[in-house]
Image 1 (cartoon, rainbow, N blue to C red):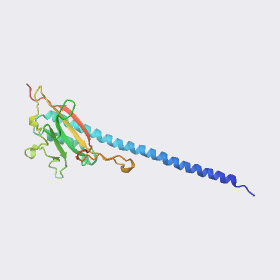
Image 2: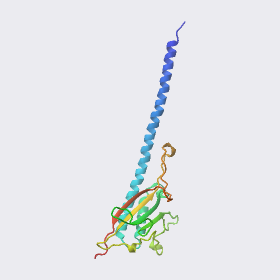
Image 3: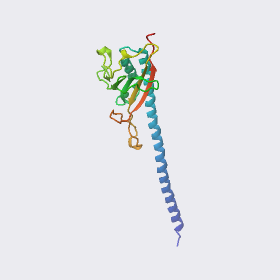
Image 4: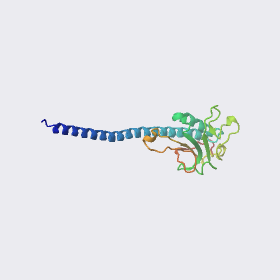
Length: 211
């Protein structure tokens, strides 16, 4: 009688090795895909961060050069619109609000926002192209409405007491991989305790009056 024990034993060993290989592949592939998705996620987040940082730096330079001009806040916001167009959906639903404020030397607002020395503008794109910010500080549409009490005319542009302007952009971020990587979205809905990502740039106003 032919002994089949040997071939059967070899077949069983091969089956066990194949099963172990599948388990190892499942574990390794899960880790590999998690790593790849993580690289993509944080790469996109870093891209948005750089875009917002560049926008705030460009905007505060414009605000510092205009000083106490009536259209100072509006030109700052216009500059932001041009830069933030590189964000997903041209920044709609991403940029929540912008604070233009009198800053301390450490970059923090000298008062709460919005407040006596801080103007807050909410980004609400107008399909008619009139004004994309609420309130609208565009002097070309009538008396400008500022988002706080720090009107451009009150800014000190005379030496030696030049004030420091700050521009802070608060924005949201949605993770693109959804449930694959359980990261909570940055909603930034403006409610108490809601987290926002933000970038702040400060610059001293350029002297336009000399004493």
